[in-house]
Image (cartoon, rainbow, N blue to C red; front, side, top):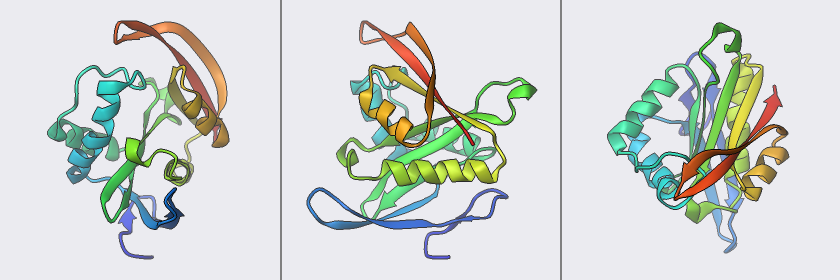
Length: 190
């Protein structure tokens, strides 16, 4: 295993290191590893952009670094939370959480992915998300649900590229920035 490998809690080792050529033809090394609570500040730097400027997340207020560190620790105790990083720091993250609390849903999770707005289109998301899906397969999970605020053609195309199929559409179930927002659910059976 190469540098930067981290142990996925009880699930073997994760070592995803790849090289991506960005739009400016500069090759960048990207390492995908398990998130740590110390990544909270970097994750906030990515996430809070979407909180403040988009309807992609229904969170209304920016998240503090200590709160995000707590989320990473809590989720990471039971499910994978991965980050993609370059020499410049964390540029994306993906994680899965329990879908519902009833025991019958134990093998179903909801997935989430965010990539820094500066790194969108650079090819970070696909290897990061496929690493998350592989970590879920290793845990013998069965179904992954992606919740997408609509319209969001980029996220829809991305999820479908990853093998997800649309299974539900709920009109006007969220409200942000004084507008109603639809939500769609995409599902992947592992």
